[in-house]
Image 1 (spheres, helix red, strand yellow):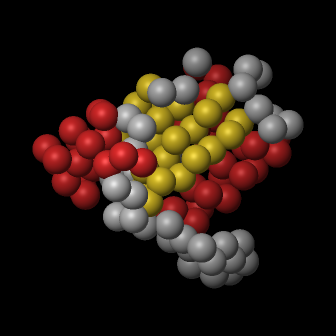
Image 2 (cartoon, helix red, strand yellow):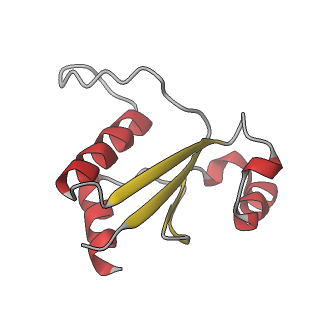
Image 3 (tube, one colour):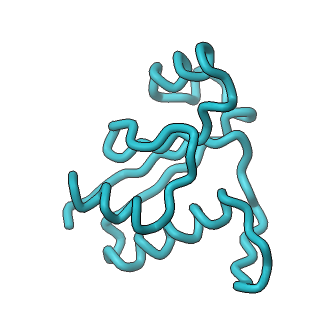
Length: 106
């Protein structure tokens, strides 16, 4: 597998990462966990950057497309998931298999 960079733009960031399988987890927690597992499976060839849209100002958002999407569609468009600068998921939290399939197709 070649190295991939995943950028995830979310409405909030979860700082409490409780991976207790009995606990009901939020979609962002599951995504964070899945990306960590993919990173381990790939021996570090998957890197991820999470950006909290509410705390970031426009100068911290590298992709002008993100600003355009937010201005035109609002928060309902989140999360935005980019892999290697290509928007691959919009408005949904992908599961691990969807991420794996997308990484394999690139």
